[in-house]
Image (cartoon, rainbow over all chains, first blue to last red; front, top):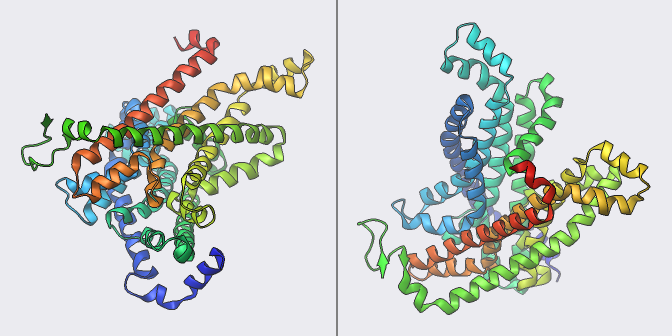
Length: 240
Length: 228
């Protein structure tokens, strides 16, 4: 039997969805771990990124952070963190995933504030706003589309990486794939493929959903102009 | 000789240990060699496929959108899912790992090459045309050399992320240094083994990145003065 038919069969078995440790359980774990990681990433990266952007310093730091995390394998962080004071279990997994959420969040928060027209910034100073006021009432609203873009990138990345949590018994949809591999290809091929479809489907839906949210929070006049600018900002961060 | 990260650490299980490296140098070197050859082969194959694809996207504008969109969608697919898609067909082996990492590297290189080619100024293109260059001559003598910085950026990003991605190959037992990391985790949380694998991964990425920077400087002598 070919793997696709096996996968369809596997997905069609209701018990595979509702059993303890079935798809619904794993999906819940996957989403809750990812959500916690992205929120933790936001808590760290957004204030830092906004502040760095506001002061105009630390552009090098932002690039350094994104380059460093690119080189560190996810697997390494997932295996190292449980052995530190975080201990085994969810906190370690969440922190490991949050580390990979930080670069897009940080870079976009930084660029979001930096791209604000200097004239607008001066006008804010001119009407007597303090630095903190200008950041909160002028720069932050103008940076919202960038924050949303960073959030979308980070969310997709975390959902994708959360699949690897299974290697340290962290649960999530990756568990289905790993158990499938444990059964050998001939027996578990369908389960492997089904798990892959679920993980990829989840990542794509997250991408689409937050892409929609991103459009929603971008004021209409900025929508067309920003696409190009956002891409340029992303290029700048990746070093081209 | 070994040294500890903090006083609270278990003295029997340090994060760094020369003892481990000395006793297991064979395994570590084999894994490192495995990892390096996998990465180099993947990036080479990806570059050989990606650059022509990017040229195609550059020549035939209607293809640019679909090619970039396809690479975007593929990039969203998690690596583990890609392993899951490919393994049932190609089986458990190096070929599967290679295909997955090649696919990811491909996307990065295509995007950066297209961006590099699009950065070639229109005047330059017209001047080349005016001098009688044909489509191929212009591509090989003018456009590709001018797009080299973009291509090299793509190669660097692809190389660094490939080094990290190969470790996911542990799912089918072919993860290079990932094998060492994962085995260290399973064998009573052998910290120095995990740390060795991790540091070697980061070091490998750094060395390959620096090598590519060097190659880039050799290939684009005209940029050297400008960069200062």
